[in-house]
Length: 392
Image 1 (cartoon, one colour):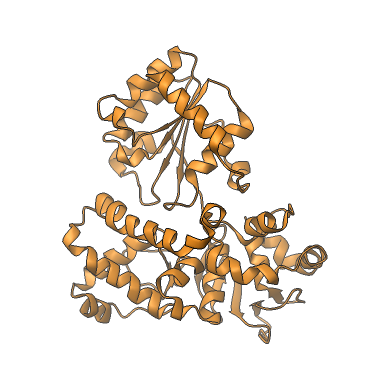
Image 2 (cartoon, rainbow, N blue to C red; image 1 turned 45 degrees about the horizontal axis):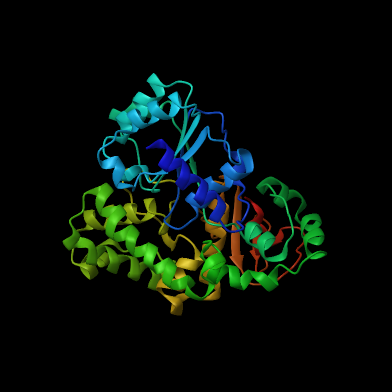
């Protein structure tokens, strides 16, 4: 049976279209024995791994991609398949959709212990978490998150450039030099609006005319399959969860009144708090806390959509400039930095920098830094908003 999967593997590698180079390829420690790649539906996890295989191993038969959705694995364990693969010279096994396979935790632990020469890379929903009872696997597993495209990745794809990542500290210290160099080669604002609407997920590569439909389909699949599966929610409660997401998209960014939200979706305050946590884990919303993280189920200071594309897809009438700017900033900066609510501005980054986010007329106070839209280059403590899309 390994031969059949090798044929599928070869066909997939031959049929893949040109892809967008993802920065995560460079940051993963591929030498680890067990690697997990988490990501939202449709964010490009499968393409990401096939791209890795093509660039690193080409047609090497010691590497094999397997989708666990295949019905074959209803009657075959991962450990027995992996054992056969190793005996046939296999060295790297890539397993897609691990969450669909029962007892995957025990199976992977067995592979780790009994097949030490085999590396396993697997993908999962962003919701997947290991419990304290699964500590044995947790301590040997390296977990990475494949986020949607950064503005830098999108811009490189759209223009044929190869702009490198710029760290947060580099942006703060030397943003004018970076922006002048970039603007000398491309006009980033000419691409920024399209990115905010249709550039975060890679659907535009194959289905540019059906972008919103593709995104909405995956949002609904996340709500209908992933969230109920991981959190054991009965499907009869799904309309409440969907309604809450729509309310958030229609009102974001806002300071949540949990009692009001509970009344709107006809449930308890405790359930609303749980639903907010589920939606955040699913990468559908962002929760902003005063200390930068969720502690003891306390109420967040503000709620945002996870990214601007979701905002356009779910509540396009709410895609207003200020909302888009703040959502973009939180999304791009939050992937690599600590983001918390600020008493002096919109966001507090790394417990040090107070940021206000707005248009080109934004004038920051001395203790603030402005992330300003519709400017190509800034000065002093006024930085172009688009540049924060170069953090990954």
